[in-house]
Length: 452
Image 1 (spheres, rainbow, N blue to C red):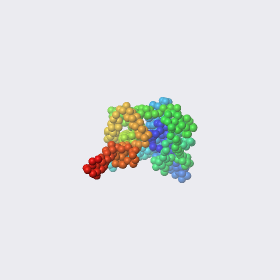
Image 2 (image 1 turned 30 degrees about the horizontal axis):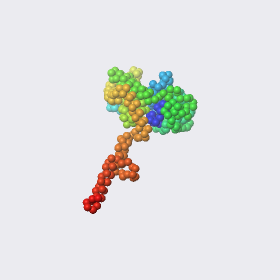
Image 3 (image 1 turned 120 degrees about the vertical axis):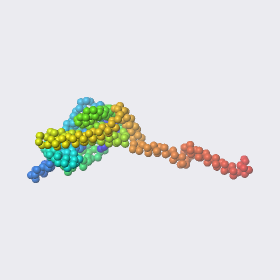
């Protein structure tokens, strides 16, 4: 299922369909990772051998965290149409689920950052930081121990399911009406496990999505009929029908304004944590662009790519900050003062380049004000819905315009098939000239110069 609102459905329907779809994805990924780790533990015990260094499905954890971030961005998009308590409850559950599996993932990222940093150094620099590399790898191995990883994933799965129940979905129901969706990419969840697929326990297939009838109208009654087949465990939230385009525009404008303000704060302070805060808001804006990209696919695709570049630059900046903090937190004597000074100098130079790149792109991404972004979204979404309603291709507006202008030209040269057919002005002029020419010919053919 593409992570975007459909033009032919109410936004409230799109919200709950996307949110529950992402929760199902998290549940399937975590269940597969837990089962795999349990099997690995059993095999290791039978062999009476030590467990491998990497003992969690890093890929599954990473994909789960991404799905949680998409769901939280969706909640923020529709926040103004939700009761404050409902938003805090749902957002809090998702935040706790993300934190539960963050430790092992952060340790893996730290090891990746150290490896990338080493690649940019010469042989002398790598030798100087060899001790730090050993400390990072040892830390990643400790944090990735098998039993704590399984406990963390179980906790995250329980929180995801609790959030799903609040939206009317239970993991044992196994179906979700709404837009058609593709299964979770099996390759996306690869880590130390062979595969973390979208399957349930004992190899059973995970939740499937089935199609539902299109609501006859965009109001609450049509939405209720569309959601009824899969909301048997719990009714849809009473605030769900209030989620409309105005609510989405306010949420979009709020995230946009916060990201723009965070950029100004980070530029003025130069503090590491401020740049990290900016990245959080950029990610909210980036994922909300994905949700709304059907408003103008080509234009939104360009903005999505730009936001992704800003997020990646700021993410690498934060990874370097974490690496430097880890190095300085080591016990005295583990890493030499010369190595720490060398690390600080190279990290500062790299961060300066990354922040300059992020700011340069951010000035383009956040060039207009909040009100302009909200108004533009509403105009674009309504225009896109109108085009979709007339069955005109959004991807080929110029081709549709060309066909519209080409039709009269084709009619000019096509002869009328019956007397009642309408003619263009040019065709009428050609017919009149033909009649006059035939009249002249008849006149010349008469005797006495055409006298009567």
